[in-house]
Image (cartoon, rainbow, N blue to C red; front, side, top):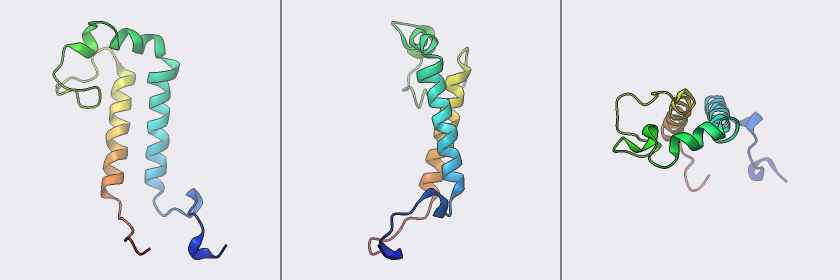
Length: 97
């Protein structure tokens, strides 16, 4: 396989910030939906205060205080937003590359 057709690897990636942000997001995701699953179920359960009393979505709650009694979710939202911002701002390869 010549160099022009090789699949890029993380080591060859010029944007380590995206890789770091992705790893931070995965860590936060694992806390909310893995390590802290019992508490997450309480927070998103039937009519529970933390998820049902605001007008937005899980990712975009639409309220000022997003972390009330659920710090793991706040970290997940922060890492998600940071990652998506880096991806949106990253240069794109043209179709002929």
